[in-house]
Image (cartoon, rainbow, N blue to C red; front, side, top):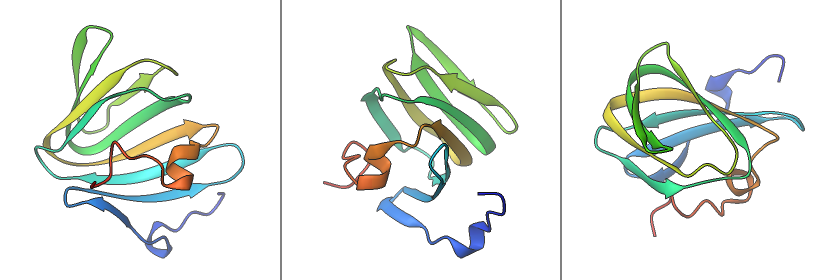
Length: 116
C-alpha cells in the first residue's frame, strides 16, 4: 500500500448512508468512509484494534460508559473486543485503520453495517 490512489478504488455502497473504499495488504487495512448525517452504527465489537481518523464532520462514539465526539483532524482508538457504537452528528469523511485486516470487511459478513 505504498502508493494508494483512492480514485482507483471503487466505493462499496453498504446502504443509503454509508459508503467506503478499502485498501489492504497482509498487515494493515485502511477504509475511507463517507457517512451521511444521522447514520447510526449499532452497538458491536470486533477482534481488531481500530483507529478512526475524522477528516470532516463529527462522529459520536459511545464506548466504555462514555460518549466521545471526534471532529476534523481528531482520532479515536478503539481496543479489540470493546463494545461501541457510533452516530454521524454531521455528514463525515473518515479513515478507519485496522491491523490485522478485518475479515468481516473483506468477506462481506459485516451485516451490522449493511442493508438487510
